[in-house]
Image 1 (cartoon, rainbow, N blue to C red):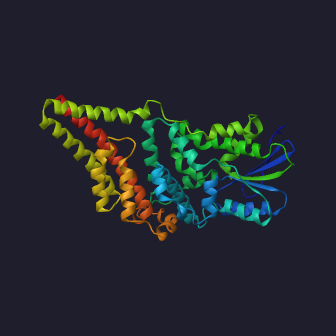
Image 2 (cartoon, rainbow, N blue to C red; image 1 turned 90 degrees about the vertical axis):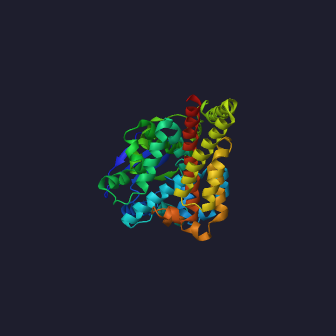
Image 3 (cartoon, rainbow, N blue to C red; image 1 turned 30 degrees about the vertical axis):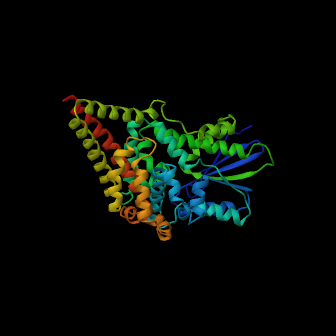
Length: 405
């Protein structure tokens, strides 16, 4: 049976809630992710000897990134491109860059209190529980939870805020004291849209509460110190004290990535059908008109994809590959122009070990995304894909305008 939480005011404005979970006791410590005082508080509590388990607001990938400086260096870039994960990796790098920027501003390593928790737990031979949901899953659920017409605005807003050269505002500092890098990055959207807030904040509160209940189901009584962003404290406490659902089922539901609308996956094939129909109609009227439509398709689609590769500062041969590939790949939804251009760029400018090792630092500066060969390949993939997509629609409208004139 879960007992009501007990609030314990502590010096240093570090809120703590103690929650009884049957014979287990969980102490929730609310921290600020850019605060040296929070790191000191974590060290003090673990050293007190009152706890036999430490839980932290990290998922396996963020945990690995925090403790393994070479995590990005071990990334298989070809596998990332083949699996269509380039955009997700770019978003993860951007989030890391945002956290690094905040850390540089306050002269403290990113996620210092989490790193201290891991190191102190190891010193005292305490097990460490990773209770947060995978960041990739959270980003995908954010993406799928908003209408398709809002997605571009959200992503562009996120990247725009990450690359801003302005000093950190007082409002940003206060948000960072209350939450974590995900909430701070999306805060301008989360405050205004429930479809962003739910997967970004509320679902993670539910997830972390379910993970704690899962880890404390039966077994030897434990005293756990759970270290989470202060902004999560209220939500996790509420779900721990009120939610009686099966934690395994709860975690399974929150880990599920919704599939897109059934009709949406057929849209690319419908576009291909319409374009090919336009070509057939054009050639049936006259060969000159048919070839004019083909020329429109190649020039518009190829040029916009090439411009995208050029904006990413791809190799000249990569730009040429974009121009050639886009009109062809746009008629085959199983492969995109971005895949071709990224592979060409990788072949022509293969990233060095130094590029991988410098990822964390290079991504904190706007120019670094173009200077580092790894991120430049990701930009080539993204920009040429966007150019090809725009080219497909613009060329499609141009073709049917010619047919209707």
